Image (tube, rainbow, N blue to C red; front, side, top):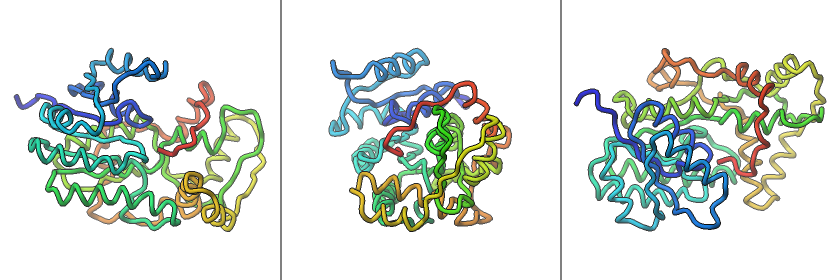
Length: 317
């Protein structure tokens, strides 16, 4: 049937961005499958609750490990689109997903786990560069395999990074400012990232293309964010400037696990995410779907006033 919704399989669908993707897929009416690790007595209550919520929304769970090739092939054969939201430590495990897609031979679109900066057009500090090299390897493997793909560059998960920058859950008056605070970042609400991603996964215009999420009203500097937050809260914050030199030195001396987040902060808030201009033939999500009303940073901060987000975790994935 022409109006039949595509079936979507999501790897990492119970992770940070993955659970937003799974929810959006269900809400947009797609038969949604989530490939996840089997539940064990050690599974956390929050993870159990997430399984329950997604199941109640209509998601079907396929429980297995990434080493179970035949199980993955079998799951892939049941769907039309595969989206990976695996976290950074598992990035290269996506080669196993690509292998399964090649064997299955039926997938109309594959979206690997990007959801950050446009890795083919940035050159960050070495720890983050090594991080991105693994993601680039997955992009090149998908291309070489001849699998129809869409690469998503969603820039910053707004709730995550605004929580890190503004600490809306705390009462302190100090806010760190990286570099001059004037570089522009692109901060997109996680729910919008998920909705756009499901849309692009089903859009013929985005096949074998990169889609960049750069909605105009979500492009702000740290200083603009702090000023906006001060107006909304009626408070005056003490800006503690952290120089680029300090950030670079930390990236060179900290252990890798700590150097990567520091290098990400440098890339986003010191070099900025407007370091490259959109070309005439670039695909930008808010232009592709002008009918979708995305959540502006201004509106998201209003949400934070009522319901502050939880403190951010150590990982940026």
